[in-house]
Image (tube, rainbow, N blue to C red):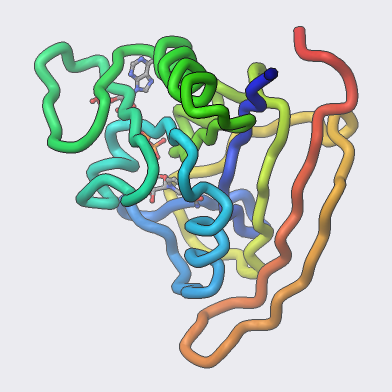
Length: 173
Ligand SMILES: NC(=O)c1ccc[n+]([C@@H]2O[C@H](COP(=O)([O-])OP(=O)(O)OC[C@H]3O[C@@H](n4cnc5c(N)ncnc54)[C@H](OP(=O)(O)O)[C@@H]3O)[C@@H](O)[C@H]2O)c1
C-alpha cells in the first residue's frame, strides 16, 4: 500500500499561519475538522509548533522535529530531520495499515516537506491578520482542487473559512 504524505494547515488570505506562536483566530469548528481529519494517523511537526500545543495531540503518534540532540518530551517521538520524521511516520502507517500521514507545521516544516507532499488540506481563513509566520509559497498549477467547502462562522468564532483539499497533478520529483 502506498502511504500518502499530506500537509494540513489553516492559512489566512494573506498567507499568515501564526502570530506569537499561535494562530491569530479562534475557530472551534475548524479545530474539530483538523482533529477529525488527522485522528489515528501519525503527524510530524516542528518543535515550535509542538511546544505551542503544550502536549501531544491525543490519538495520533506525534513526531517532533528538532536540531537539539538532547531534546526530550513525553509521549512523542523526537527526530532530527524532516526526512527522518516522514520515514518514521510512514513506517508506523505501514505497520498499522494506514494510507496517509500528516505534516502539521509550522512554516519551516511545511517548507521542507512540500516537495514530498501528495495532498494539501488547506483551510482558507477569511481574514487578513497581522502575523509572523506564513505558509510557504507554492505553485497552484501543480495541484488539482478536489474539495472546496465554505463554512460561515458560528457563534464565538472569529472568521468564516473554506475547507479545500488539493492533490498533486503530476508525480513528485
Ligand atoms: N495555521 C496552522 O495551520 C498552523 C499549524 C502549525 C503551526 N502554526 C503556527 O506556526 C508557528 C510555528 O511555526 P515555525 O515555522 O515558527 O516553527 P515550526 O516549523 O513549528 O518549528 C521550527 C523548529 O523545527 C525544527 N527544525 C526546523 N528545520 C529543521 C531541520 N531541517 N532539521 C531539524 N529540525 C528542524 C527546529 O527546532 P529546534 O529549534 O528545536 O532545533 C525549529 O526551530 C506558530 O505560530 C504556530 O502557531 C500554524
